[in-house]
Image (tube, rainbow, N blue to C red; front, top):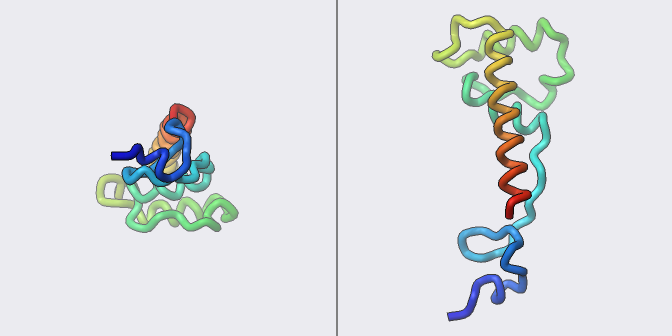
Length: 100
């Protein structure tokens, strides 16, 4: 049986999927990580334009869309949770990509 990395013409240390196909890896942006992380604390992920909104509008979105686990929390607390998870996602994703 041939090595999948040889079959697809890639070096063994390049990122690949479970079938041995090459994949393009890139760093996740801060905004992408925050949008993704917001889904853990909100019923609706923050939209891309969230980052351009005034603070009051952002706070209202956070409290209006708070998941049950943080529904009585302040917007500041919800944002802290989203920010911490977003940082963790960026930190771990970058390490995984750079380790491959």
